[in-house]
Length: 403
Image (cartoon, rainbow, N blue to C red; front, side, top):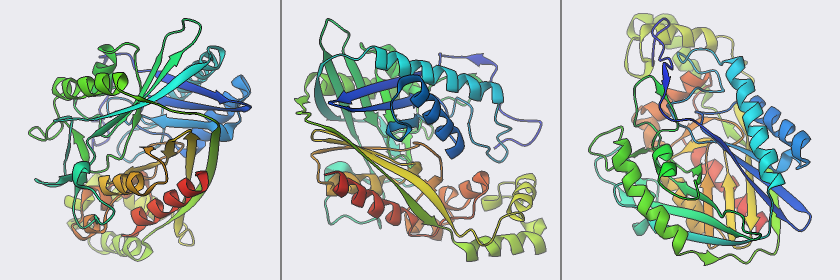
């Protein structure tokens, strides 16, 4: 976090950030999935983008998913404490480019065979919250969130198209794009992966609340090492996929009410009010942050005790894509995939809104950054300790409805 006057500013472009669009049509149903190299969206900006895409393409706004890759090398389209203001000019540029990508994708539709492939990645990601963890290879229906986990599975959708059109590749993996800490903007490690693979892949971010890139030896990850671990797995997944029998395209949308811990919120407000001199580090970040947060918190309507978040699911044959707006801890993403009535589930975060982290209960007990600091950055009360479990249950219900 950077105090006013010392904000992290873009001074150069390392690699051009992109807005990519995947257009799908089966029978009379169409959908568009956008993947945009930014940190995050607000609900309002995502809704406006969906409306513009509908106007440009005819695809219903309810069938348009706006996903952020969550690269930390790009601006945010949601106000965040100590992150500076949201740029209107940049917001309008994102609207324009994403809408152009959506229209270009719809104009380029052709018949295609769809394949789904997967491959585990060695050294491409690590759980940043603990020294040792378990992976998806050990995950079962009996696994619990008492332990910390890591999803190493890369999943790839490959579309072999007719009419001599270039094939399309989209992949899903779990790793925070945080390798670069300088003032050059770009997509971070996904950009390096995209440079080395034809066709240039679209990327959908996974459940990375407790996950960083790399093998964990360097906490923020080495960009080239990360890309060199991921790229071969993507090549393998692309070349060894199973055909997906697509008979329909089905989309279901819903909302989930995520409860706030209002007692903790009120206690934080009172603590800062009575003992501001103690609010200068740890969960308070620094004195300036704590003071700015207290001014925002004082304006909160105490009758607002939950956050209504959008969730969505899309069925493409045996493949389900689940979309939510959270930074979900790894356990819950693995639980969703393991329990789902589909042979393949891509659980995509940072979509259509941004609510911050949804962690396991232990993160609250330990006063971890994800559980107690990030809500302050977002100007929200902290969520209750069971909010991630609640979101997961609602998402499981949505997948069952989709099936």
